[in-house]
Image (tube, rainbow, N blue to C red):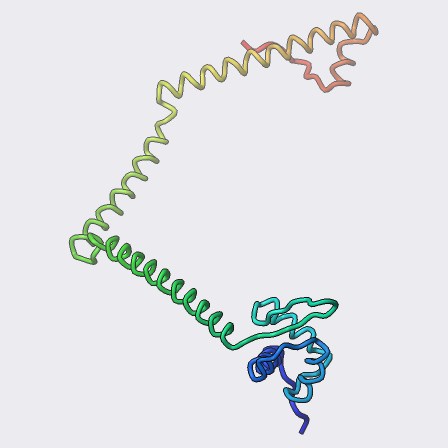
Length: 204
C-alpha cells in the first residue's frame, strides 16, 4: 500500500528533532540534505517548515557574512514551554475567578425568587393587575374624545385647517380673476381646465 506522507505539524516536530538530537547549528542547504534522509521530510518543504518554526520563536536564526544559520536547543524549548504553561495557568486561574464571581452573582440574584406558593400567588396577582390596567386603558381611550383638552385640541386643529382652506380658495379666485383679465378666458373654461368645482366657496 502507498505510504502516507507527513502532515505539516509532523514535519515541524521532526525538524525540531534534528536540532535537539544534534545540538548543532545548520545552514538551510545542510537541512535540505539531512531532513529527507533522516526524518522523511521532502527537501522542497524544508524551507517552509523552517520559516514557520522561526516565526513561532522555536528556532533561532542569525546572518553571519553572507549565510543564514539556524539552531534550537532543548533548554530554550523547555523555557518556552514553561512560559506557555504559566500563561495558560494564569488564564485558567483568571477564568476560574470570573466563573466563581458569576456563580455567586447568579446565586445572589435567586434570593427572593424561590418557587414558593406565596411568590406564585403574587405573580398571579401581578398578571391580573396588568390585565386590568390594559382594560382600563382601553376604556379611557374610548372616552378620550370627551376629554376637554382633546376637544380643544381638535377645535384648534380644525380652525387651522379651515383658515388654510380659505387661503387656498382665496388664491384660486385671485388666479381665476387674473386669467379672465389677462387672456379673456370664460370662468367655466378655467374651472374645466383645472378641475375646479363650480360650487367652490369659502368655508364658514
